[in-house]
Length: 162
Image 1 (cartoon, rainbow, N blue to C red):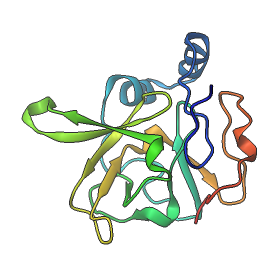
Image 2 (image 1 turned 90 degrees about the horizontal axis):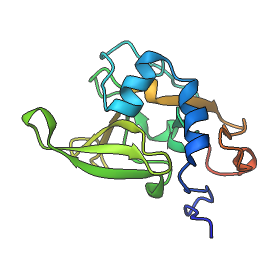
Image 3 (image 1 turned 30 degrees about the horizontal axis):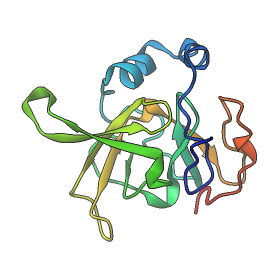
């Protein structure tokens, strides 16, 4: 049985072979952030200034994580969002590294590190999903979603960029 999100995406984790294929295409920085919970330097991510309508997808597996409609300028130096594309697409994990208590966000399908969520965002959610630009890819509105795992998801019609 396939584990599907409310928005219709297959959340089944990649097999060992699929994972190896996905990881093979990563740059050193992408590998550090996605696989080793790293953080890119602020104010240098290529998606920080992205203002086009569309969806921000997991760099590793292609699952849509956020929409441009939820993106806002937080002044922190990382892309920030008020809510996920689909809450089922992210897992939240308590993070006590570096002597702080934070909430880490990881892709629900592949488990890759995305960033953190903080309770200091704008209304109505008051959430700030602070995400590493290098952990995401951008898919313009009305373009097919990435289907890196060949699950037929490129054709899912959803709120891409709503």
